[in-house]
Image (cartoon, rainbow, N blue to C red; front, side):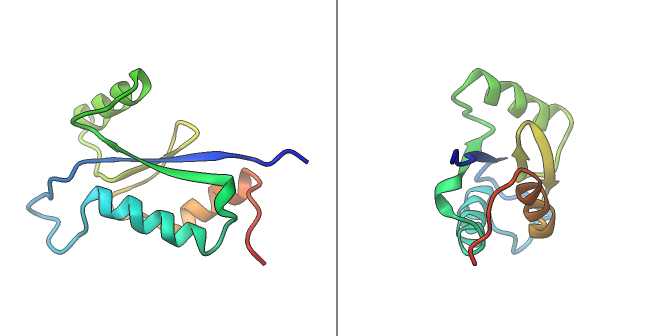
Length: 108
């Protein structure tokens, strides 16, 4: 049986915006998201990757980081399979819905 592997990318920066009072940084959000998803899904089927939009490492991440900046997207931006799932404070229900659609199995 082939297991599905999904990469969940969290684009953002450590800089906190002035209007985001008491909001966690994007990197803190990525860590929180990883922990939240591991309570619901098999941790071997996904990975949460944080990408700093100021220092992206791959060509794909550089292009998307430019999009975040140019389109003034609210970060953190959560992306699964090149599709923006949520901007700003992540909505877990939207992320769960996408992971369920992709066939990730939930922990019983």
